[in-house]
Image (cartoon, rainbow, N blue to C red; front, side, top):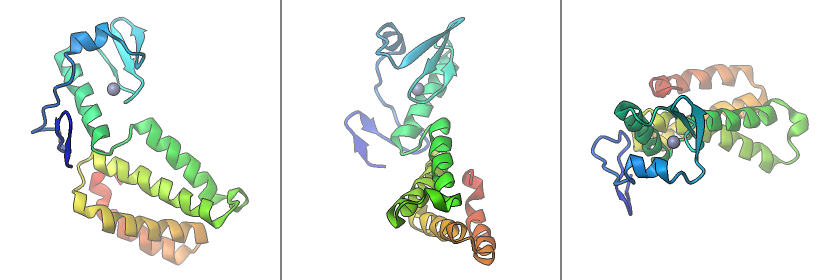
Length: 164
Ligand SMILES: [Zn+2]
């Protein structure tokens, strides 16, 4: 995954130590990204996690969620939002104002799926075949080609283990 100023990033977040601000500092200096939900629970507006900052386990889980984002993952609600928007255009010809827009809708949906696979540690060298297979599937869906949809759906099943 390359390096950042803060340290080495890995997909699984195992060998990475991001010298993030100490948790207590982070919560004392809330920069507007944390919402107080009461009873000691905070909601992070970046990753969407609700957690109890006084629990080490929760703080670690929160750090892991941010590592996934740094590695190219997207929070669940964001992925779903992108997918919903993309699918709406893919499934409704009236919403496709230009061919470019249809292509962008396909890319958006493909990226939302890829972001989920990233969160589940898909190897980087899978990007090309993963995207190729998903574009083939989305092309088939947009073209409403039953036979192609069936064939390409079968093809993308090989990535099911990454949450596909
Ligand atoms: Zn967060």
